[in-house]
Image (cartoon, rainbow, N blue to C red):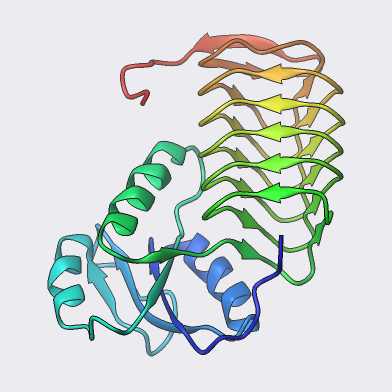
Length: 227
């Protein structure tokens, strides 16, 4: 997996709050030019000075005004437990001819043997270890550690400072909040949530919300919006 490098191409950000500021800092270091920001709340203050923020519903009009031969990349600046939203938006933008960026901060560490899929984000001082796989539109946030041979699905968010020990498996759309620790060979089910600071010693079933040290299930989340 190669790191982003200057290419003179333009990028849009989908999402106009704090994650947009984080991603833009990373993309600016890689030499990209920010063309526009889109968010469903057009009343937001634009996250990047001098760059317009448009309502999401105005995207098609904006796109029609572009030169068809002018390639545009995108990054999805939506964090938290919105992995399903990231995947849905990713697929829509690809269908409209845009190219997803895999964002890798220059001050992160990515093993040469790791596989990072389309649209994923490896942020500042994150570590992705040997023979690890990071899925489509998954976020490995600042200072997080994903150790050797982990398998992380799509639309996952691994929060700042969280640690996945070796051979952990995280299914699609799971959320691992700040500072949580997942012990070796533990499996986290689809759509599950691990609370901040939790220490997970046993497998977590799909859609369960766990917290504490050692972690325990505190509720089972709704699954109606699962995709």
